[in-house]
Length: 311
Image (tube, rainbow, N blue to C red; front, side):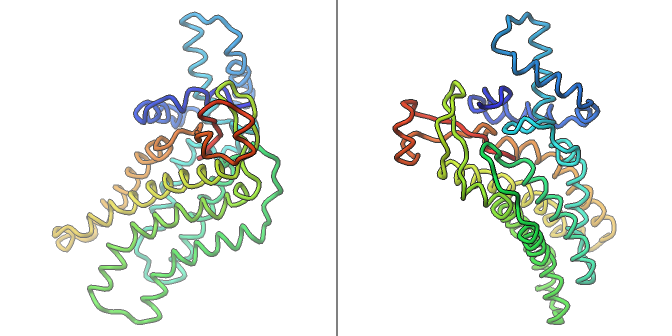
């Protein structure tokens, strides 16, 4: 069954989803205890069987926000605090800014890339689709994937160091032009690597009433592509703003001030882009029945079916 707090998600516009996520990402949601979260979950699950007055509607709305911020929609388990969406804003912002700093050594570049890639990977795994039983991710595979992404992040510093590049034009390319597409690549590649198992087992699809239809590989592919695009937009635009600031002619007059402003701009941009990224596609994803596998088309007559896209 689909999580009750996702039931209306696919019917909302981008602006409605953005407004919802803007409220869900409120750090005060992190102050709720496990008991309060479970109480909110019970309230939302009884939503359909209750006749709600205005006060009760407000109570259910607040409970839905808390559930979205704290509970995985597939498993129904309370998410670890560090991997809840509101924490992604608070912890992800300084990590991505630290990784964007123009490091003078390969070791420093690697050192600051590693925690960023590790946390981004952990958040992706914990907030992926869990509608079907899955084998635990192999630690070796996860470690190799994170190390691979970290090495890509440190590659520009390594190239400049080993090749002894001194050309101002090349330095400008690595410092101003390369970061946005590189970080956009990080976002999409991290999702693809961490959620690859969903492509192997499929994801559970349901009809509008929440009745399970089956497991679809095509829905899993669509979910992963949409999440990868949204994450690419988040990290790519976050890296773009300081890169544009470095292109300013005023940068050469006071480089230290502009460097500080660039870091602050990246912090603010990341914080503003997280709800945008989460809202580009509905969390309750949908797929046309005609696009499903042949064996699933016969199990439902509804034109559109739904699944948890993940974050």
